[in-house]
Length: 154
Image (tube, rainbow, N blue to C red; front, top):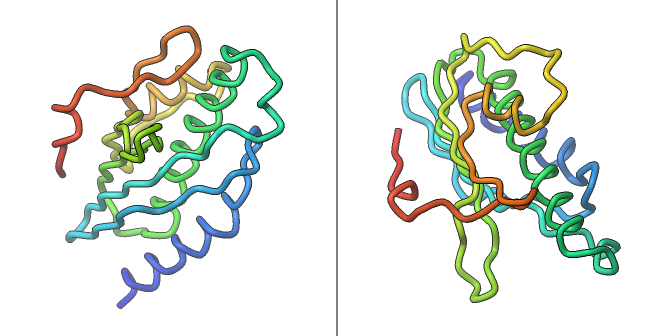
């Protein structure tokens, strides 16, 4: 029963704390949360670029969107381990809404509770890599991952 309470705490925290981002006022959308024994799989739809960024250069807008997505991924990882004390591992995936309405995989993560993440790393992308996330950054923008990454399971 405690695990179910932890999951509900995680969902409420996600709605409360990640309602708005630092670089985007768009909201995250939880796509899937699957719990098995001591592991969790969590998929979400990343925030779109902020409407106020429409006048910015495309490269700046995409860099802001990537920065926000990486910050959100690390925050979700932290929230899961905080809300579920018995959780040992998490499979995390972030998707982006594509122009055709499909979802493109942009971030994949395999996290373990005991992973050490140094706090003095100033680059958000490097902290995300050290936290167990995989992604492709091209000129500051997150690129879609190859389709074989989409089949990742836990």
